[in-house]
Length: 295
Ligand code: ATR
Image 1 (cartoon, protein in one colour):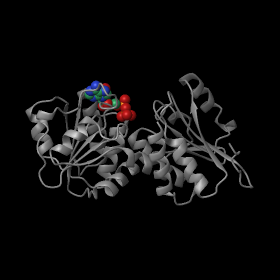
Image 2 (image 1 turned 180 degrees about the horizontal axis):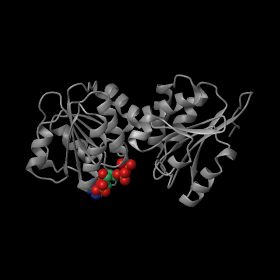
Image 3 (image 1 turned 180 degrees about the vertical axis):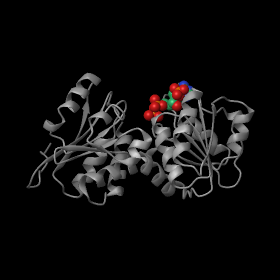
Image 4 (image 1 turned 135 degrees about the vertical axis):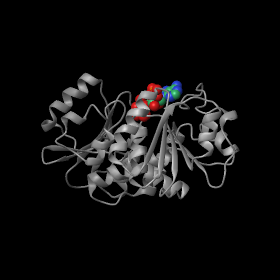
């Protein structure tokens, strides 16, 4: 194998912190972006257990990285170590992108942008006046709900296995987005769920159910109604590319979308924060698709 040619100039290192990190697709996606713009930047996975992650963050002035991403479980853990946090990341309660400015660390959240961009690209979705049902109330849910509220939805219903988390999410965002009507409840397969699904324009699964082949579907077939005009379903999971949940929705006539677009667009926004340049989105998308195929 030929060694990679390094362009003249300073070499900058970027990376992603997480644990475990075996399945991260961010390195091939960002490396393809850097290479395509002929930037001498390199992106590496950094798998650290929590004690080491905290040690590294507490010595942030000596950190060699110019910027980095955070994934599970460090999107919240990183926050106390940052010098500045964007209002969006503060409201969502999680940081997925950090840039080093002078010797300070500034945190951002690009997940909400990624989600909204994927909706508009993949579904031609327009939020104004719409009603959305969100399944799950964890970190991913908070980013999606924030994006939808900013974009002007009329109503958001959040259902979660642990109902108290759905209530907290509604209360937090309800104080910030006064024009949006929030409803929370328990996620249970029954006829009221079927009715609720039928009455919403968009259903978003933000839970991890569907990642493993042995997982039950988040909504059982018998409780998933036939689509009325232009109703959409999104599952944030991208591997498998079509979860059982999306399969059911498709057979009932719903427009469907997986989480690959969100992954791509949150990445493209991080790329732009780090480089100040427009991200080569299609190049990054191709690298993502190839990396998924190779897995
Ligand atoms: P993420 O950052 O990916 O959102 P998270 O914050 O751990 O991860 O949230 C995971 C979400 O998936 C939660 O809403 C969780 O429900 P609980 O709050 O009740 O734990 C949901 N989830 C995970 N496994 C689930 C399951 N088997 N059935 C239903 N919901 C599940």
